[in-house]
Length: 211
Image (cartoon, rainbow, N blue to C red; front, side, top):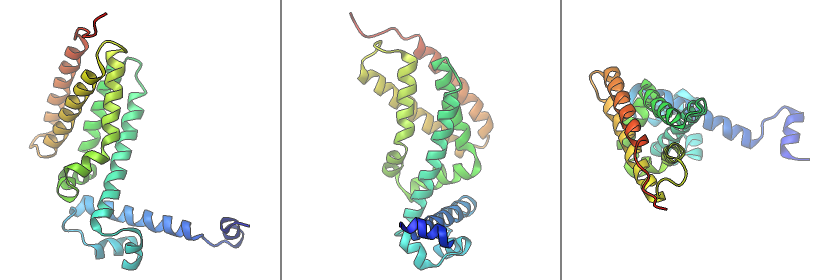
């Protein structure tokens, strides 16, 4: 008889279930405080109090506040990537799907809590290298979307990858600019127009693959 079976019959939670609950409480409390107060002002004491766990329980799950922030950041990126993938799947035209997925990224990044965590505090708390590593899935989605839109066999792989890096970089920089803009909504509209022009231009590029 497994530990899970015994736990179900006795009504007790397993160690794994208790650990999962504690992790969830810490992540939920940390996200709320990081989004409201910022990374630096938020103390471990405040996080533990909000999560209703002891500091000993915290250190059982996370090495320090930075590691906890990374876990919160990873969850934000996962949620954002899922929203982009869902939006992308709604469109049959690959160029429109690519544009709408990019739009979802920018709009999602403007949500105040997400913006505070992923764009304002993450560079200082994690550093660009860690951020780039965590955002790898989002970049792969850009590469996939652009590859689908350009069509198979029209361009060498290295050209598609280079273009995807440039477009993805522009997308991330645009999100960062909106996070510090006086008129973020106006900048969003202008950015979307520019990306529309950019995608229309890329769409008309002649194939560079010779027969």
